[in-house]
Image (cartoon, rainbow, N blue to C red; front, side, top):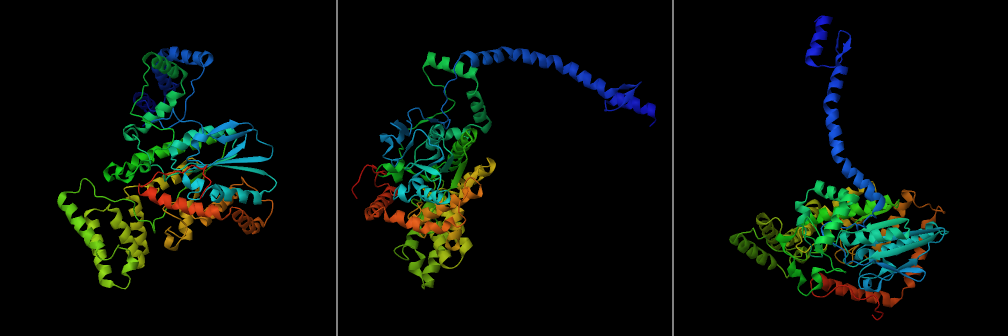
Length: 527
């Protein structure tokens, strides 16, 4: 192709870079596109200009409506602040003392003070004991050893049965109290209250993002406020659950266990809701310049059978009868199918395994069969199979009082995505447990660590803060002083403290069976 022909070809095909009679074809094409799009873009801008002018004007003359950050599918208007000002101190309000332990801190933060808020559920509070042996206390003792010249204020905001959606309003509240660090522990209580979760299934992520953007528009707020005044009706895109002032757990009522139904569990939507709340909390902390630590919860998978199991509604009548017959025969091998009771009896052990495997061939989500098969495999040294089945048993528990795998994984993913600090307590205890299976060695019940477990948790938090350079040891061998400090602290609690803890543990066990209400008043002083 000659030079002249190339120029003609460039001009005819519209390819960039050609010239014709000294004129750059690419420049001409660019100008033609500008000529085509320019007037249209100008018309679009002119069409939006009234709205832009109104938005700017309202930002000048109309006060911004206060928007409470909360799960968009929950009505949290009736929730009250956790703290109130009492003289020179902030204290937890009396109405919250049924589910929170007393806590206070000065209204005026002193110089050289670091203030840490620990938000979470009963694990943060220290159940079945109380805050003096909970991980926030052991963290404080470690901080005081590491930097003894600093004034440390560690505020325990652990609420019994509190889930992420109830923690979010508290997080927004405590950000006004000059925190230097926030620790968030959640995951076990997401299924405790009855909530309308269909919105999380039906509402696309993009719609929820658009709703958050709309909240920042003064014009949309102004129009919505006017509509609300005229109609006196709250406009919502989905059915919203009205939260009670305090936790209304299903298990708080006699027979509450019966309210949990296998086919009604909406694990995916619950996890999506928890993700939204955790991300909202992390971003609120970031916006305020406050570091945050996410805690991945652990649970007892080795020594805690499922709290409830049942067959799915999709199981036909014939299959149900077959499973029930197999389960009854499995129970007949012993008082219970505990493999330890069958040790040395090869025929009974083989018979039990066969029946459990037949049940799971029909119903792979039978939580009890999964658990006892896992225990049997563990007894026989089949560690990997045992781990798989024991974790599946927890995840298929019809009454999910333990954080399921998808909950734990969601917290890890949020920590990575949001680039925030994370303490994986589940992995930590697994590394300290035989065969990597967390059980009674470290946990006193289904989820709560023993006192020494809380000690390790507090120590690991301190180590994490040192690793992140938030904490700077003044002495190289500061850990050598820990044992003496721990001993003095425990001796100062008195024998009654531990007696009351054991009594509360018995009550907690009854609560998990739906046989009693949870949360005795913290004002009680008698054992």
